[in-house]
Image (cartoon, rainbow, N blue to C red; front, side):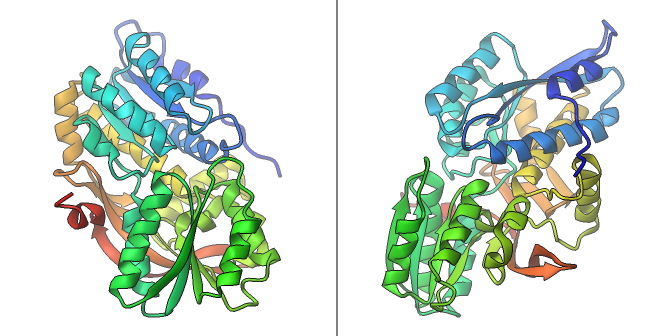
Length: 396
């Protein structure tokens, strides 16, 4: 497969900045994961940002350019992420910050944005608490409560007994809590659960525990990328499907870019999520076509790519509205009113009260479409959902 090569962001930035001394240049810090065992999600985020810049930089006001300043956090490492953010703020003098795959890293960075009055548009990290750590944080990605809670409600109508298996870090804990609440409210019983190490996990012993418990279904959360394929392999190798144990979870377990690697083991897996590359929306069809033209027919965009795409769209919106003169407080007011009815995932908006994402959630099933695996959206299970966590934790 011949993939069309895209210039590194530094090269793109050079081309965008140009040679005009009078041009207004906006410095955007991008913290992403480019190296290490957890780099696969970072590749999706990186490709989406590059594609957005390539297709949309001409839509900025005349004389206004963006300069992406890219840094590699190496994976979930809060201390390293905090150091990188400090350097971007004090040395590089960035005016906006985006990216950040990992919740622990986002939580380490958020307080710095309050001190520096630096608008931070989260493109991926899903931990529910991050926007509450700083008034200069807005999120366009997702929370696990948005998908796991309605999945629990749906599952309570289909299964009596469920086991949970989640990665042992904040998003995994949140996914587990949200699913349990939705499932038990509907009368279901959670018969057990296990938490799996985030770093270098061996899924086989944990999946064996699930099989031994003999539930009707297992709710799984892992942080996408290669781990999704590893979970699917363990599920198949240990014969859970043959034992009648249904695999369900948020969309992280059947990420679009990994489906081809999973094989037929993924067929029939049910998820709830805010994005599918197979989504039948004009904006999504255009996005997928542009992605495949740039990166090759064999690679699908996944939900992390859409977070990066929409983060850049929100950033370009505030730049246009301010004609390139970035004021931090004005930027945050604009972000609170950001809406995009034509995101690839469907309509989205920022909740002005929480600065968190509002979006549709879709019930999906992995099926074969034209000979290829796809997350087929069966129904919209939540319309313009706010993060449910806030409602359930008012008194906490």
